[in-house]
Length: 231
Image (cartoon, rainbow, N blue to C red; front, side, top):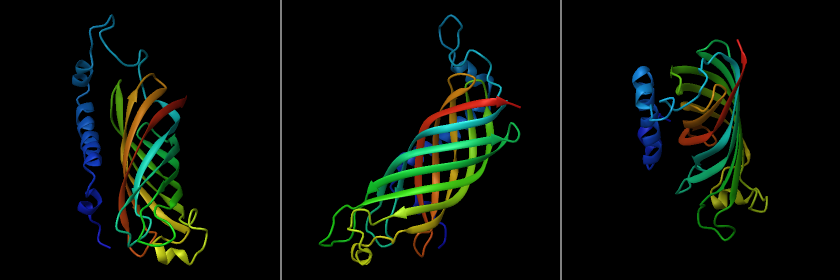
């Protein structure tokens, strides 16, 4: 199926705002000193943010947060659904710019289905395991932009509230239980609270292939990053 960014963004004005904001923050961070001046406040030190210099010299970082994602639990279903859950990610920084990451996401939600006498909004849940790389982009004492590309497998369970009867899949329009390739392409903004701790906001373009077509969706997560280990 031909990749369609227009299709991926349809109905996602909020996600569009996040992506545009991510790019805007990246441009602001590249100005360095200007951003520092913009964040100055009338306090004793004249600044907000970490007291100790943030050098990004850490060898490891772990991230944990909540994750929200849109999805379509059957190729011919009339509407999309929302999944919610958690995300855990670990990164080993080979250099101050390039890191290798492992990412796990577990999410669940109810989905609309085609008209049937069995169920109206069955429960769907997914487990996703991905590996990939991060690139640390513009950064300063207060914040940093990271770009990432992850790929792996997703395991979807679509019959948890349909009586576990496989024959019902076609009747309600759901995918059968199984595995499918999945990819997360996006970035994150880390707002530093200390040398080791940061608050992260991370939007993603999700690409999956549970059916006969490749589908694109949006996800966004937020949580805490902890950096440790010195190079």
